[in-house]
Length: 263
Length: 261
Image 1: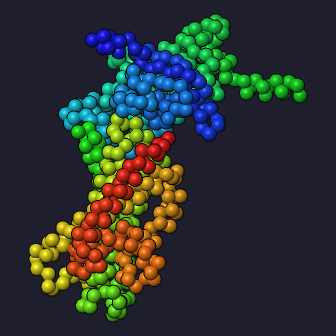
Image 2: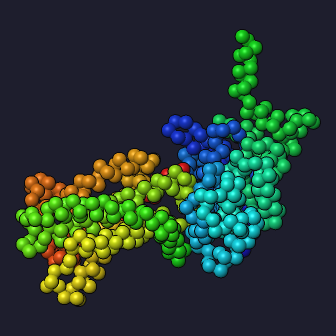
Image 3: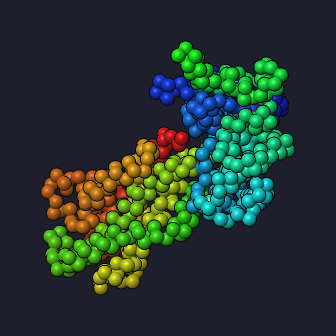
């Protein structure tokens, strides 16, 4: 009973001094943060900042070098299977079997998560409707467009009702219409179910609109973390999230400008 | 239960794709059929020492070609892991709450089924190349022989699927895998007695052949189909089973350690 109460008040994700080294290069360098249940948490940062590495560690796909992390109350090193049960993930690059149909991809996923046939059929039908792919469900995925693949992957990430959903650049390379559509699903999801969302994106307006809190990481370290409103307010009344992002991560560009001034 | 369902769906995925790409079945028997044609007809009049009198070369060759077909198909199917890695699908598999051993077993089950379908096709076609059961075989001996052939086919497939999976787990890309696999596969093939009796080899090569699990697989296939073999049926079965278990464990170990991202 006590543990049950404890569970519901526990953060969905805790990360303590997480470090990941590839040879001697620290891709993630001692970051710490916590994500509350039902929160939508954004990880922003330039390419190579360590966002995807962090997500891969939290999703049990990469071992960590130092520190610790829990997802849904489970340790990502010692309780991999429980973590895997609790999470859904949409990877940065498509991770579909293109020689299977959309429905077969969803079936495969549902069976890997041990979902029985009846529940499987019900959920797949409902999710296909949600992402508007019911009519294309029996077409081979190799004939899908980029946006259709993305929508299918989001549907797939939800079949097993994860408590935590990772979205690694869910709208990368999609047109504005599809991006809007996908953000609408995500927003509805976050409102209507208890799922905690942790996402990365390069589109600042999207992060601004949808994230409750944002962490900006650069060179494997968290440089700032707060609500989008607070981050912008700290910079001035007219500041956009893009300004905040450039302020914290724009060093390289500024250095070049300074050098040009000297010349 | 969850693990069994996962093994089943991994198996099912392979089978769906196999029947969607039937050219894969045809392609896999092309090489052994070529061997049957050129070696079989080329040496049809030759008498090889080590081949029992009264057994024609083509009859001697067919079990060897079935063994070859199982070896090549199984070793190469390790490449599917690397394609999955390349297309990102391996991450989808590896992030599922399923033990790595079940994932390896699901792949092996799918590959073994594919191999057996291909092997049976080759066996059927071999009758057009002059293969036939000995006239001394009763119907029940023929049926028993075919069942035993299936057992040996399964064991050979499992062993070399495991070898392929072990290599694939330790490699990054498909090109490198093909190179290495060719380098490993041909010695295994030539040192198995598939095309000529190993007793004709010099002693040091014979020694290597005795270390090759495929030698016992091919010998077992010959015992099943033509009733002539170097070792007893029990011995062949025992070695093939032991090799299958040992190599599957090795594959599960390497697969568990491999990285999916």
